[in-house]
Length: 139
Image (cartoon, rainbow, N blue to C red; front, side, top):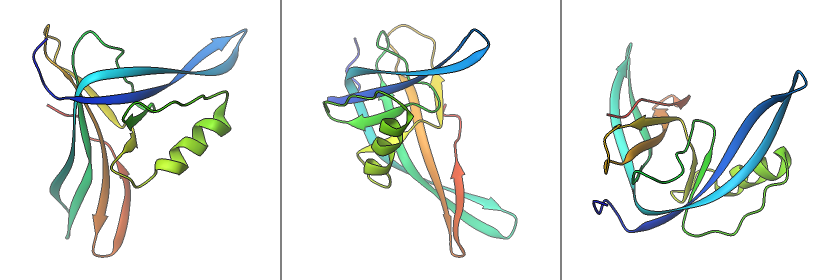
């Protein structure tokens, strides 16, 4: 494995299934190792407003459990138990706005052995206030 980082990340997967015609959501956790974790800033013109997108980019080495949009990533080896939507929402609320966790907005798979997944979550800000949550495909 190519060394991309030294961080351990806790992945909380939100898994949707349909059982007997009804949506069923379960949660599973996994520890990811050898990840990189860094803050990101991007600037984008949206009409007359220059928006700054601030977020976190996490690179996950190949061969580990892949995150998907809507999953939660927490920096560190964190012991969490999620038995339902209320527990999941409490985790999101606990870590919201911190550099130590984010809800996955996009995942880009480099699709080559030994290359990491690029996982991102970006938040848009402007002088007029928050523009809202925005995800962007990494590359």
